Length: 98
Image (cartoon, rainbow, N blue to C red; front, side, top):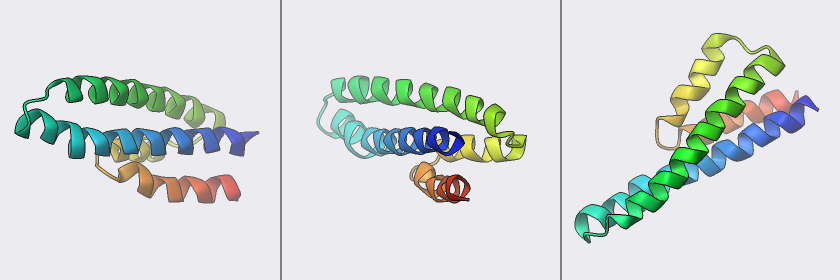
C-alpha cells in the first residue's frame, strides 16, 4: 500500500513538472513574444493547482512513510526548479521499489 501512495506522488510530481516546463517554455514566451497573456493564465492556473496538490500529497506521504523533514524539504525545493521533479522521481522510485 505504501508503494502505491509513493507511486501516486511520483505520477503527480511528473505531471506537475511537465506543467512547469509548459508554463516556462511555452506559455511565458507566448505571453511576451506573441502578446497572448491568456496562455499564462490557463497554464499558470493548471500548474498552480497541480503544485498545491503535490505539496498536500507530499505532506501526507511524509507522515505516512515517516520521512524526515530534510527529505521533505528536498522534495519540495525540487518542485521550484525546472526538471527538479524528474530528478526526485528517480529517488522516489528507489524508495518504492525497496
